Image (cartoon, rainbow, N blue to C red; front, side):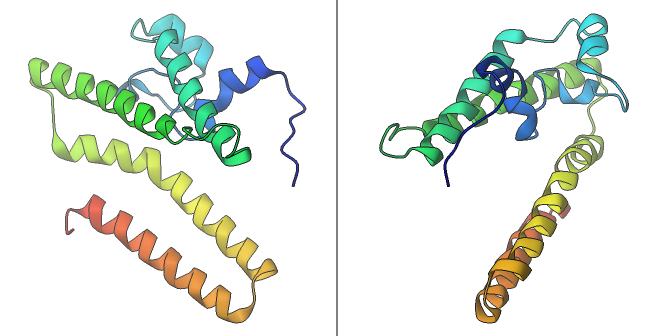
Length: 162
């Protein structure tokens, strides 16, 4: 399958983080339902365009690595960069909330679950739909086991039982 795109390169840079649920580099605890990037950046002075750019480059490195492995052999480093930036943002949130005396583990994890689980559910359902159409029965059974294991790992990790 040929990896081509019909939108300009700058659009990929602007929207790549959202494709991977990173969202714009605005602190996740400041997200409000129904807010847009335009009114968030005007109202929230913690938005960092430089961090958005770094996230986009990290995602782009991973996408190019998967599309053209021989061309860009070190693209997996983008995952490491992405995790470092995410850790930086999350640590900033925790430090600010601890300094203000408002930090709560339950609130922290509730926000993470509200942010990650919708994407997890969409990906799991898409895999099941694709598997139903494209896989043989024994492969579909193996897919079900893998998806069940992956989903239960996420749930166990988030519930604190792992």
